[in-house]
Image (cartoon, rainbow, N blue to C red; front, side, top):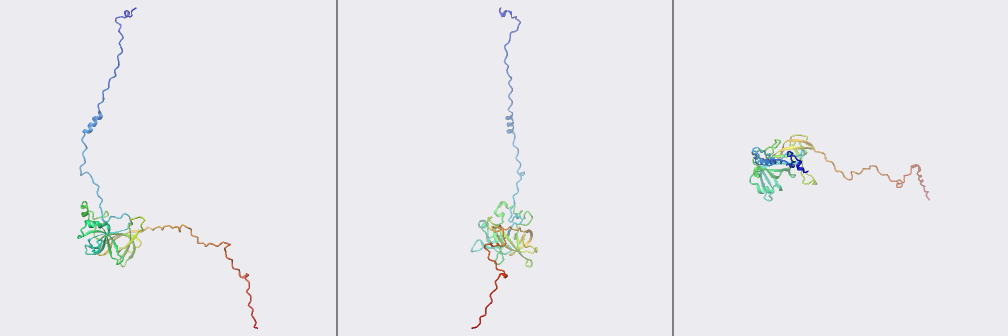
Length: 301
């Protein structure tokens, strides 16, 4: 039988299976590019005005700075005057102060180029000096180490020169004739109002032996000053250094004596006795001694 005859005309014919097509997702919009474009289009933040920018204050320089340690040795001062070099040598001469006082002075090597190239010696200047007392006649001698003229040597500091007349502690630092003397008092004469201060010079190398010098001052602020470290505020009067005020810092710390090779050996103070074989024979007792023979008188022939 033909299979096509038995099929009814109303029976549906089988359909071919349809292919499933996955729906395509819509591509997302480029968010990152949009954000980047927004960032690029955004205007930059305005810069703060120059008035709001705070500048750090510059540290004020001082010719005599505060001491760095409680027992810091030093002897430094200021003298306004005109330097008069001698005809024989430029580094040796006299300092003619504003009060018409002539003080024997020398120029140290560190200030030579400054004086020759930037300083007019025909005019008075405020000199930074180291005071010394000459051993020959106990007179004041000055070693010139610098010049304090920021308005001349540095134009940028000209405005600060008027405000730097006092230190941070309120003490006058830039004053003609002012000296800062710090050291140990090794001599005092209350009737004469004289003291001698021992000052240690700063050594350039640690292995170098410390050097000291003595400075004579006129002082009448105390009676018990010997052996103690003092901080003196001093003023120059003619050729004398007069103490205006002083602060007692205290006694200097004791120095430890260096140990030597001999100090490590124990000291035996007991005398060493000789050995028995080397001992000398003991003297005999009086009972064991033999009686001396009696002298015999000779009869005359």
